[in-house]
Image 1 (cartoon, helix red, strand yellow):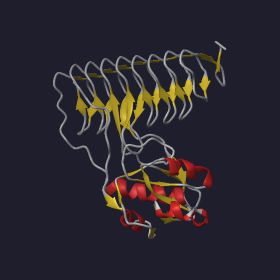
Image 2 (cartoon, rainbow, N blue to C red):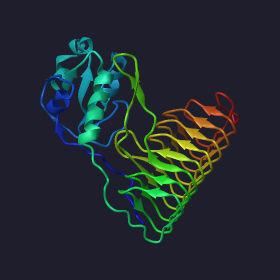
Image 3 (cartoon, one colour):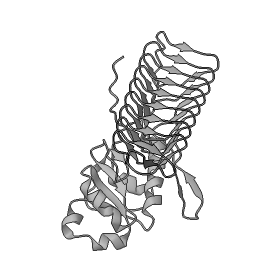
Length: 303
């Protein structure tokens, strides 16, 4: 099964429509928006609405060519140059993060796509109690263990074995405080991509991406029992994740990485190819290829 793991969750709205969801108006052109995302991420959509809470994030937004509109406080807007103001559209809000996620939540209910096609089970083996939702793509020779759940939008390649009681494609954990300081959970609208010749153990969770694209697992990678892979993580080809490992949101393993039991990779950290992460280690910074990391925080014993 040949699958392109690059994909989009496109919406298509005018910026004024997004602003109207929170009873605000726009400044600048009423451009079309086809995605929402954070300004410090690589994004796939071509016209993105994002937000900034302070001037320290403005450079990220300016350098991200896909960000065409920003939600920012009036104090930041007033200090922008005329050139920058003319090159982008804005929504002014005293609480830009809350405004951004409020718009996103409302759009997730009405504008983002639902994956409703019927799954072709081909020669898959679906064990007792397993649930395969509509909108899943399964390759050849897939085995789904007892009581596992494959959520809508997931793509599973050929020769994949998923153990018992695992969940593929569920919501990740993203929350913010509302105006009253109460925790507010954020829905996820992305997907999961599993490559070919992958095995996933029992009681493992792989969360779908938050906004667009995929949380992905590369070809020939092996994932043990009780592993947690958060939203927007990327696992390269031929990686090994042993028992009780955790990958925080948007972290990445390049090719042929080995995570020993109970190790954890902090969000947005990139672990280079052929690296080894020792048992119970906590990786808080990017790891050079070929490194051997141990400890809390993990240090490179090769150095």
